[in-house]
Length: 447
Image (cartoon, rainbow, N blue to C red; front, side, top):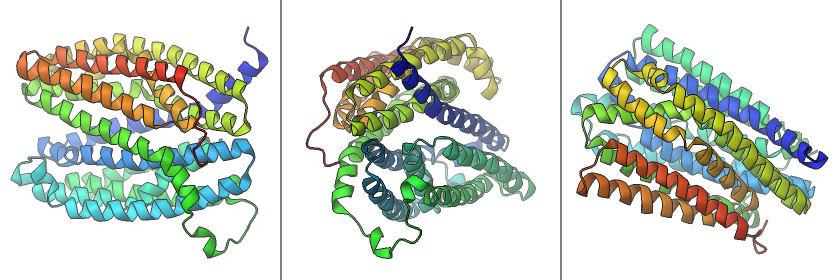
């Protein structure tokens, strides 16, 4: 039997995690629908939309990395019972969302006409790809607000409201897709228009929730404008946590780009099987990312409270829960491999190759989920430099170098490439686990 304290920790973790898991599942399912809607227009439309996916992933990684810095800082402030600290951080989120959103918008709008050329797209889709890229990135301030404010709200223990906002926006996006793509005959560019409107509405909704959150707002009904000036001390503390996470996400994203380039040099059938299998797997590792945010919040609270027992209980409970959940997830992926591939293609050869790959990776789903939760532990502790080192070693030292040797020098196929991906996941989990036994909370972190 679990002790009462451990039971409370497990209940709190599940309470925080299930909305994030459900949100991720809804968003992924709706992403599947979104992809299918554009796919009905043909290969050119699919290419128009997919060209910007790598850049979108990179951009979202940068913003979400910063958001975790705020989540960790605010969660620790709440654990300490320091309302002033929490509200100071909340004010900084507004400045960061504005500055980062405007900066990224400017960069992406400059990139827009060059992006299709850099990606090697056929000239026939350059115009539509550029327009789609502009529409998707124009409301970047609202996208930054959605991600950063959402993290701050979750840090207060409210994971349901961000879920409601994001799920609503996902359904809205699907409805607007239907309107712009089919009813108004805007094609693939219409999908960009739908995304832009959805992002604006989502950002506005998340901002309203953020401004009305009593923990983040405090008791003041009217806050002087001077309160929103930059605070170097708070910003430095948040960046000490968030910047290594940004670098980790960028290293991971760029690694995936290079990794994919090795596969794209193979036959079209093999590349299609690889790409579809990666997409099909997404929904199965969502529990890991949902538990990651909950774990970061509770670890931050425990450290703020100065409660080492609670911190240990959170670590043990979160890893145990996610391992069991991902065992179930991996089993479902193994038995449903052909079904998942069949959702996206009717090509029997592609389904056969992709199903084989999915069954290979299904055995490592518990390892992948455990890694995600361990990253959440490091984030909550404010120790974000070590996971950066782990990402560089496992992604670039194993997956990239291994795949390069297998493909370019040994002439091996897609199976060997996925074995390198699995080896990357295993090494990452081992390194993170070893680090947890040796790492302590930094005493010099200004938070």
